[in-house]
Length: 385
Length: 184
Image (cartoon, rainbow over all chains, first blue to last red; front, side, top):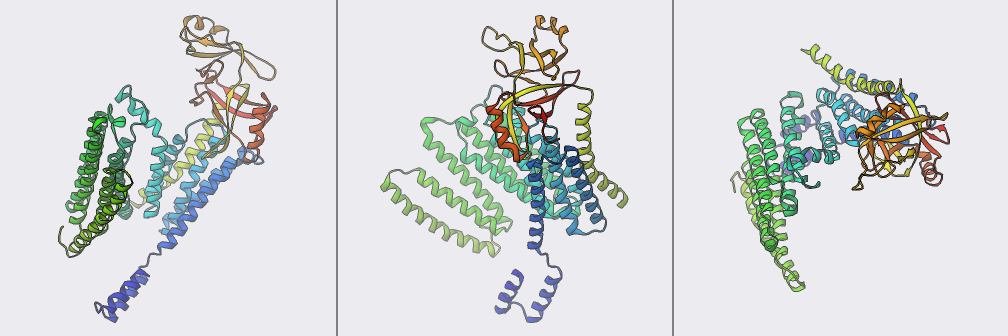
């Protein structure tokens, strides 16, 4: 539908003739990927998986435990056979949906066993078992971006449900420090870990698209982790643990950089490694700055963190411009504008000042829009701003 | 190459099935060759994301004598000594401190269950995960409200069967309401 809209626009502008429109239309019809059908079927499989979990959770008393367990194993076995047959026959749609369904049945089975035998383990242990049992078959038979994104969501869910246990793992390295202070490290480590996984995934030709999406999501996660750290960190969070965090962050960054270096071509790896490097520098700088935080100079520190945030997003914008990524460039520009506006408001107080601040902020936004428009147009013509 | 890949796919697809069956087998095996104790429970009610409704409960042990606090008020580390089991399989217990004096009396115990004290009379076996002396009992959705009332208003109505291995490993085998097993 989008292609038809653009074809009509280009034909009306005299850029393509009728025969070219007909040829492009025929090719698109033949190679059409009905994304809405994939999304709908994905939602269906997800709903079935969640439904199985809810039925398990309802814990029907009338059905004996043995029958429930046997039924679950039978259903899981049948689904596994279905996925295998679909894989052998190279039927993409049934294979992907079947794999997603099996993914849901496995967590349903684990939950059922925990319920029947009154197991007292933490939810994250069940989630880790789920990923350990499901990742091998998903890696071998599921290649769509939809399944990749859902798997990544499951990893993120598992990672954060194990937050307390991960903190306890890190705690001995930062002896005597209270819990709740490692969130920026855990965000950063997860993003680096996912970069490694995505690069490895992208190396397998059938899963190249899936790996590409995972890499984009992991890099977006990295930017999110660094931005969150710079936005919310202060002395309470980092005074005692910064050296340990920076050390662990450096190891994770090196691993991710090595994966990107070995797993991508020269042109592909440069922007990703540059983004990774800039992210680590900004992330580590914010931790070091937070250690030096002085309560008396709070306004100055907030301004420094604001400028660090802007510098980071300027680097992202510059990398996006060099790579010709207009959407990312526009996003970076918008984020910088918003942060400038917040910085502007942080520096003022009182009702009159707030009113003047709103007027000034509005003028600032309009000025930034004008600059952004000019830069985006230059980008469209291939010039680096 | 294709055959190797097919074999890998079969192994990967069979893995969850085999692992789930193994988890069931392990639980069944753990329940064979055990001594079953019946212990009353007390507690409150929220929900579990994965496993539905549950009651948070604590054990009501039939103490011969309660553990003695140390000079600084702390309860010493130690284990539970089962000194007698009645006809209803209800155990009479005493606390066995890790000290030499405690070890000297361990010979009288029918069973020794390692674990920890969470308050003056709340002992939780080490193999049952807890952060506050409570543990979860998964119950049917349709009876969650009734059981929650029962556990609050009629102490002793709810009890659990604990499967205790000779090495002190404990797992919850059954939830009972007035002596009747639930959901089996």
